[in-house]
Image (cartoon, rainbow, N blue to C red):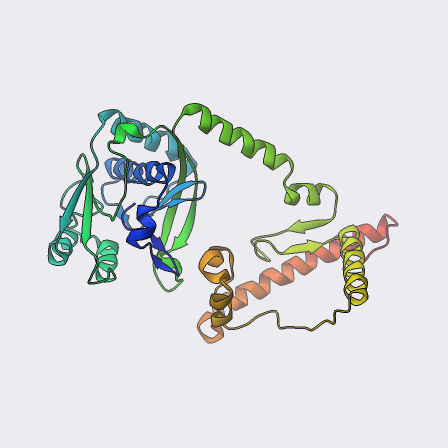
Length: 326
């Protein structure tokens, strides 16, 4: 995984790494195998962070080729070759200057030296505390900046599958380069992998986003409005109002009083509450109105189009004799 970056919280401590579970180590190792496979297909790939996460792993990569699910079979085939090669994960302790020199030569996060430096690795090295030892991990020709831990050999990785690809800013900061984040998951056995995806399929059938839309309660429009922001339709609005009424009556009966707070606040509040470090990717970025005039104009055009669509929907309801407010 190279060094894991917790976008806004910083790197994992050595103590946190020492407590990684066996499954997390397996997934961490699978991230390295993923990077190895990508480099065999696209040798110019530049890697940033590739940690294990709750349901699998990912690796952030800067690459001219836009990876899509159509590329997954080719990548997975290269991953299988690396696993079958059963290369050991070899830990190498180096000095800070040695690590920087390797990064300058493009050797970190790579299969060999390259003309271009390993720019993200250079940045990560410079942010490693002076008191912390710097280590690399090698599997076959792939050498990466990494504090570990890993499984013993690539052959110890069980069943795996790539799942999806998304965009992510380096370190979660929109002022940094936008990278491709390739996700996957891995388990000890093929059965565990199959059971996991079977559970996902069952969950999709009970997804509130799907059911709510089918029942005509609300619609979601990530492009125009944003993720997790429902547009309540007449039936959904009626339900929401009844629930709010019940909540108020229950609170007042228990002796509570209500206050009102703003819908937006400074970044400091969300850092204090703990939301920003964990949900930064699904939150809107900070407002910088002067620097985003063009983006704001585009958003206004999109909102105007959305209002037009909602107006047409309201007319459709009116013509069918259904009362309601959009």
